Image (cartoon, rainbow, N blue to C red; front, top):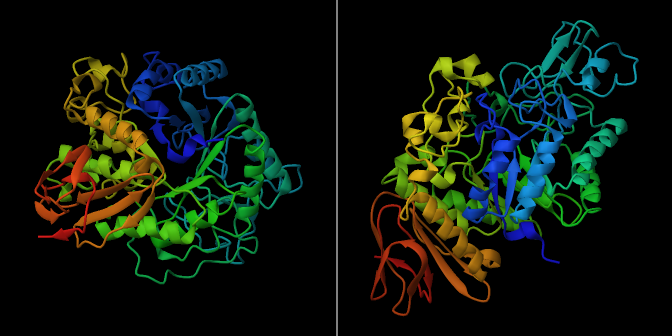
Length: 535
């Protein structure tokens, strides 16, 4: 049986910002259902929904107060069922974000847990006594600023939170917690879901001895909201016991037909690739994993090659998931603009490069329109760390602004009300109805179709070629051999590719008598390429 996810293109939808059907300014499930034909026409295989579960929305749904209910902001369980039915009718799979490492402090489990130290839920969260001087139990940091511990006077103890203080971490050393979490996952699989995107998948288990982290060995690049880089985070996440729970999740998934689980590895750099390999090794853990390795500012041939080769070497039987943008990072067209001839040139080259990578491909809504990061003002913010640390931190609202559908409609067709985040003119200019035959959207459709039609790009092995920066070059080898070349700079470069070479698929290059001229941000898929050499 073909596993649908192995060569899939997965389209991430941020429900708050996709399509509002009620006029309240917030996107919802009915709105997503209405716009699913856009995803199907793009050529994607699956949608990934960011959290839709009941939540106080302190962290935009990543603080779940009921795992078994749809938040009224987004609709009802009936709306969810209709979305699944419509998506499947269009040939689209559906996966949802599962936020399993922590809940909201408004979850009934936590409300009970904080009552006292002896109730049935007392050990469902990570509680610890203060140190003799009243300090937190460890030196661990929260991603959203300050210690990862909040003192609760009702219990006279601290509880662990890796993110907001209103997002207490579950205690995965407690068997009852693991059983309960697995039951919540089963609930959604029984409703026809095709799999999960597992948020912060390496954060489930903490060090039971509560040992403090040592200082980071490398000189950290400290962000105002995130002191994680100051420590070598060996005790607060990526614990070896995590793998046993992933194996239980896989056992559950394998009880259904062709379910896929992709884990978000919350880590940067080389270590993230190692964890991806570990978490996808064999056939009893995750099907796929992705990290922030390609979601940061690094933009060089060496970086992309190291990411892919690092995974190949670290997990030869694993399967990667690559993406350039999501709801947590600045949009890549803006993030990498210093390397671009223009925003459009970067959008096309990034698409061509991503579609040439071996593995599963992720697209974030609006990416297919060449969408830019939105410049936010303080009064427009919703993101907690951005509000707390403004203006030193821009936050995540800039990549979460609404999808734009009709250029000249109020709020670009997203809502008839006041949108929860603003729709500004630079974003509205990229609206779907303004994308013609030579647009970024048309290019994405062509690139996805070419990937699907090419045996080399859909399932071929990757062999990197040694060319100097700023050229990234590799061959994909299957029933055919395809040479993929990308110029990661705004300057033109000339490369010899051999007299028999010819271009195929979408390209931004010229080929004449065995000489390939790559303009700034140029790219090419080449058949019958010989030895490559920069002229």
